[in-house]
Length: 323
Image 1 (cartoon, rainbow, N blue to C red):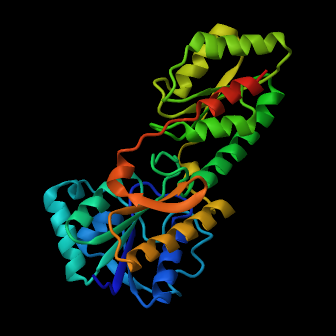
Image 2: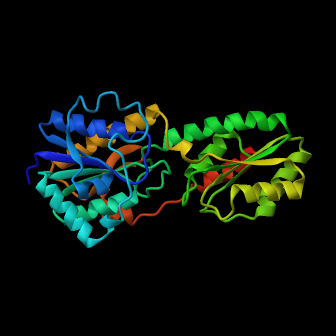
């Protein structure tokens, strides 16, 4: 099937670097002679027909900005057969022959359904949580890490001044990648993630009391938002059981925003180029991934069936370095 018009959308949670991916898709596609249509607000915008033609000038000066210039939104309607059929028909009505979807696993399920409905579709992994199982890296992860690290470093400054313990919640409802790497990079005493069960008394209280005996004067606890205790409850329990003044901080959506790092800009640009090259070859139902440090691609269904978890070696490294 010869294609003339490539659509591009961002879906699910926003991530720094999405704009670099959009820019790469637009400029690589136009350089190959294709027209590019930007779809606003993800699958919701597709169903509404909220779209416009993009040119190289449309995507100028966007790469350094966080978020997504195309905006994003959740779309429950697109999880239904009727929604998928309507989306595919909208593509045909607007002359969109192929589609690049930048997002996470939920976005890729929609992309797969559109592919099954006859629209050539390629996925690009964009989520700060780095929790897409088929890819070693996802757009936005590095920027989110750097944002979290900067915040924790500042909290440590005041923590050290007051002989205090700080419990810091980072994003990761079902994944502890941000938490683990932030903990290593900031010298945290403890990290708590949803993938790995923990004994609170042994891994938190005992770790702090052991540090007291060794002369430590302040403590950093990094937790992913997806564990079964809130930062406030953890802070209260630490204070009650150790007597150490303990404060909680929830970093929240500050981790989603900000100017993308070099790594996110370069990875997003390379992924965008790969997506266009796949569509030029007539490929569909593929997701661009990082494997063994290289940009490649695989079948979306195979990718969705894969599982990955926090590296136990990195998790244990936090304990090793916290003595």
